[in-house]
Image 1: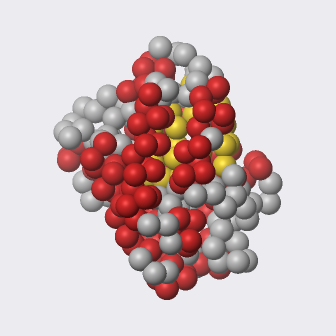
Image 2 (image 1 turned 30 degrees about the horizontal axis):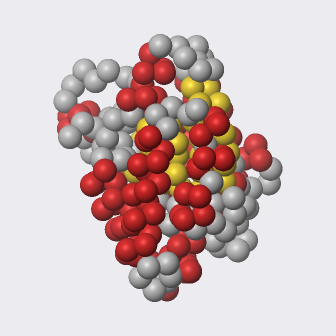
Image 3 (image 1 turned 45 degrees about the vertical axis):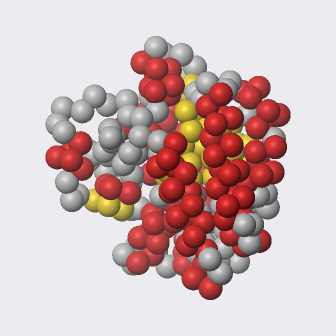
Length: 249
């Protein structure tokens, strides 16, 4: 299985995570083709409130906005746009229902699909959730887009959520089955707190659930590093490239 390890110097001395958390375990051929052909790059961020930007002070501080800014800086020859298609409170099935309206007209090479938080909170049956993930990935691929799944955010009360980890496992199961890479947002945020770089209060909004500006900035920049790595032709085997080094941003 191909992997695209994140290596190289840090852009800034914060948001440090192990490189393995940024490594995409599956290729993104549509995005890669657009990058190398200098075609306009269109990325749609499909999701719920943490894509829309609940907890951010402005739309400029959402993760899609930060991701676009980072990719434009990293790929100055490319016309990059990241379209925010987040709608607060939505379940996977509701996002699936609006793919034709909110995603298809954008003709993206890549769709970032953030989902699972609200499904876990509302207790959507795991079998239903997995089926909806599968249908969504297949529909997005039928549009000619790569898919990159984004799992749940970390927040303190997650551990009290009944069956919460099962929804993380469900996404990984579908991703493995369909060969779709996953942004490990839960583990990234958990590491940022457990490593004492942040506390829950400094990484999350006052409700200790949604992200704040700092968290959106970290996620946007870390995600950019993952995507930038696919445009670099490896000179060493992926296992050697990844090593045990941390990636700082």
